[in-house]
Amino acid sequence: MTRFLPDDVLLMISDQLWYQKDFGTLFNLCISCKQLALPAIVYLYRMHNVKLGGSDEVEVAARQGRSGDGTTQQNQAVSRWVHLWKTIILSSLSQTMYPYCRYIRALDLRDLKDLLEDEKFRADFGNDFFSGELSQFRKEMETPVKVKSKTKRPLRLNIIATLEAIGEAITNQTPVLEELHGEITPAALLRWIPKLPKLQQITLWNGAALANGVGNFLHIHSPGFKILRFYTWSAPDTDPLFAYTLSWFQDLAFLHMVRPRYGSVICSFPSRPTAAISGEPRDYQSLLDLKLDNIKPEAMPALSMLKGCTALKTLSLAETIGSTDLEHTQNDIFLEVISWLRDCRNLQSITFHKFLSGPAVLTPILLESNIRLVRLEVTDYAASKAKDFH
Image 1: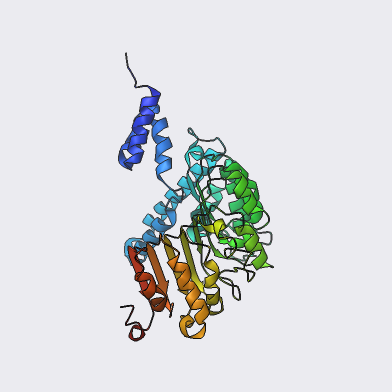
Image 2: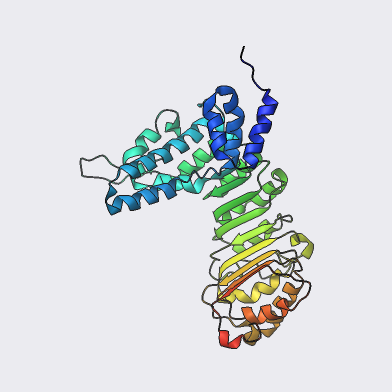
């Protein structure tokens, strides 16, 4: 008579393998027998971000194809990429043996967008992908291009509508999702967030998607939310909207903003001192990591508005062209930035790119006995004018 270990013991074994990041053993458990497969699959999905890595694999295959190895490897890579995403989507519709979606902790829709935009996918795999149960997600452009050739017309998808429809289905079945990344509309976020109580971080293309009450929704439905990233913020009345949105993130630990909107102040920090991060210091004392890239010269003086962020462990600032000398042109701002950094007693890592006054700002910080940096990176400055810093 065959004897099996109790289910709780199998879960403990799988949990330990997950803790050790032992993918090979977990995979072998998945293909050995049904009893071992269920607990192993749960932890196998917890180990991996559902980015699936398809775009990277296809790019490598394409380079090999250009070097003379043919297109077979590229076809195989796209086929695996298609199969992986199709499995995830089907599981959200209860069409797979196991509910894979329920194990997902990180969902990266940017990779799915790369797949939908891939030429080989659109030409050879698109029609098969959007067949059967997945036909409901096929959102084509309303005005297709007329093609005179008799060859098969490549699939012309409305990418944003397709991603939103697929994301809607997946988020219905992801109760433990912690990370969400992609080009997501405000309306979609408002629908998805109440279904994601474990959500801890979001990466968006346009920060304007956080407007219309999204910050409030995150505050209510995702109490553990900590990390926010976005690449641009483009919308009417950007400054007050951004300030209002930030007011809901009092427990935010990581804020990463790049490509600030032209004419805005540090990715549209408002000019009113009490409106955003420069407001009550208690509101942003939980912020641990701050990264601002491509800061416009006209936005550099607003760095002093960050004085409420005193719990920082990591700070990264990068100007667009490196033309602003705060020390000699706006010395009051220069001194306020030094004063702010002196209050950041937990700083461990500082990165300044194209920041002309960076060495002058850092020199007194490095002399502070209460600040112990473990990483320092400063680039694109005049070394001849930074003797004290050196």
